[in-house]
Length: 91
Image (cartoon, rainbow, N blue to C red; front, side, top):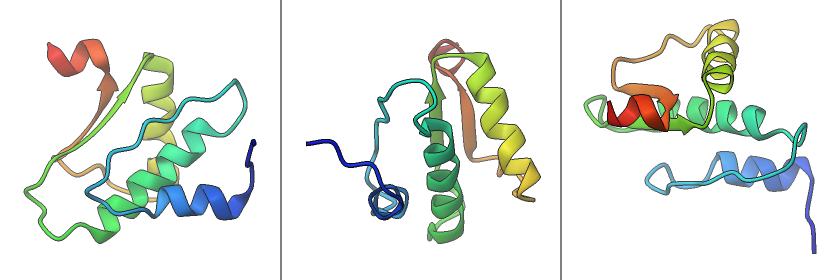
């Protein structure tokens, strides 16, 4: 059964901030939008600013898109937030 609706996406984006998610879907399905909403939710609801957040993508294009979308929504990237590729995460 395939579920594709705003309620389901909101439930994922606003799930417990201590829960990791993996987003796998086809092109144009809203993966980047979901990740941006999830990051906004975590930034707004985390208890400790010293805890780290990692958003790991496969491509630099996706990394740049996530950063750009957060900036457009006036979210300043906290120093504890890593957004980048798997290669840069381990570098």
